[in-house]
Image (cartoon, rainbow, N blue to C red):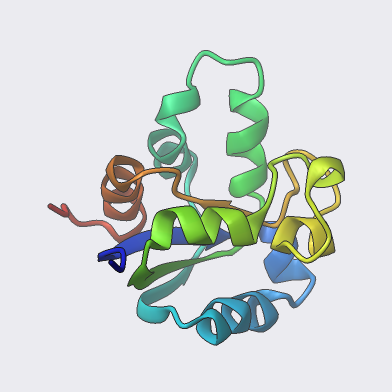
Length: 140
C-alpha cells in the first residue's frame, strides 16, 4: 500500500541563497519526484521570523535563529508528493551539519548549526503553521 500524497515546506536559508545553491537543492527534490506547488523568495522581517520560529521561543538559540534567517533573502518552496514530510526530512539530513550524512542536503552543503542551508517542516501540523506564516495565508 502506498503512502498518501502530502505537502511540506522547505526554506532555503540565507547561506544557501548567497552560495547559489537554490537550483541544486530544488533539483534534488524534483529528481526525487516531488512537485513544486508554490515558490517564493523574500527577506523575512524580524516579526515574521519570530512567528515562523515561535516553537523555539524561550530557547537559548532563538535569537540566533531569528537573526540568521533575517540576514538575507530566503526561498520557500511547498513540495507535494508521497510521504513528503518524512522523505524531505531524510533528504535534508541532521540539523547539525557535522552530524548530517554525506548525500543529504546538509551533509553536502551546510557549514554549521544555524547556517545549515535549509529548513524543512517536521510534521503536517508544522507545515500548516509554517507555510501559512511564510506565504501569508491560512491553510487547512
